[in-house]
Amino acid sequence: MEDSLVSTLGAITGIAAGTGSTFVVVLSGTVLIFAEALSMTAGSYLSSKSAQEVLAIRRKEDVSRLMQGKASKDETLHELLHRYKFSKSDMKKVEYVLDHEHDLWLEELERCEKRLIPSLSPSPLQAAFVMGFFYFVGGVFPLAPYFFLPVGQAIIPSIVITALGLFALGVWKAKVTHSHWMKSGLEMTVISLSAAVMGFFIGSFVSSLFGT
Picture 1: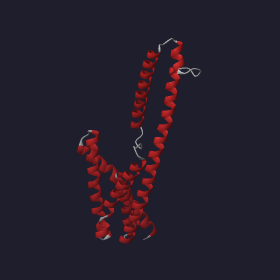
Picture 2 (picture 1 turned 135 degrees about the vertical axis):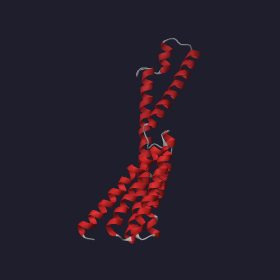
Picture 3 (picture 1 turned 120 degrees about the horizontal axis):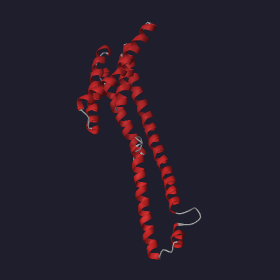
Picture 4 (picture 1 turned 120 degrees about the vertical axis):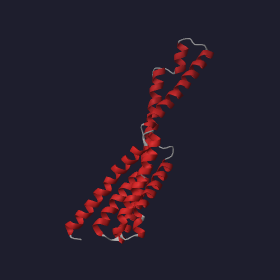
């Protein structure tokens, strides 16, 4: 959502400053939001699916390494225990303990690896839906004022609405990261709004460069 707020605001602010046309801003903004939302949806699905495939491969490799550590490649675990003259009852106990440890170890490896893969989701379809939905919602906020106000009057409200949205996201982030809400909100707002400022100056520069 933060990405959508910033990229949409930066683009339409530059277009508004460069063209001064409400029609061009609304058309460009609408196309931008839908195109990027669909692109991010597809990207999130493929990213999450790829992450799951990577974990599946790593799980196979981990299973292989664990099993190699329990017995040599020339004999099974059962044969290894039999060679050391374990009774049948003891062999069952040992195999149960090793299998139990094996599952716990794999679960711990997966838990640690999942924490290092932000794109991983229980369902690639769920990840894609969440990404696309919030990207679309985020893009609507900067564009909304241009539907109701002349292009020259809509720039400031668009920036203000986006700034409030970014500040709210920063406050929410502070709750997740247990940081100071004011600092987090201002940080999110100031850093992200720099994109809109750059968009405005680029649009104005190109407009003056071509005399339009």
